[in-house]
Image (cartoon, rainbow, N blue to C red; front, side, top):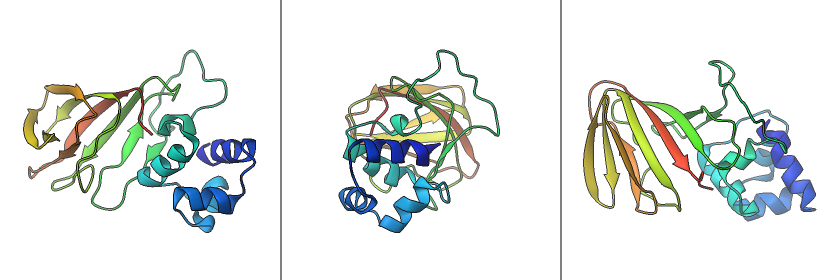
Length: 178
């Protein structure tokens, strides 16, 4: 699905694989593999590709006509993969460009990003189980199971699991960030 949408965006703009790869700072081979659904892109690669098109990451999942009603079922959801030691997210929303809801499990010691980063959105993180530290604008906020935190995500931020047990979260972002 991502590969098809990516190819659709690229060809609609008259871009070659090499042109898009250069603009997104990825290899043409990787881009070809993504378009042919041979491999899934990392979250960072998706951000770069979406940025080239001036779009959100969610738009790479979107059909040209997003459904009015969409049911998210386990085993059928797409994943936003991350490098080892970083959080991978399971998409719970259809990607209509207005709201992104993701589920993730942070293993002990995992962080969402090497360094805090900001983007023009609003975020809310709900901790289902475990403990989370939300680092926002240089301040660590401990969030326990059953608690949530909402903030202006233009502030540099990331999520950390400093505990010895897995932490499960639901992350909502509006609008989705590129």
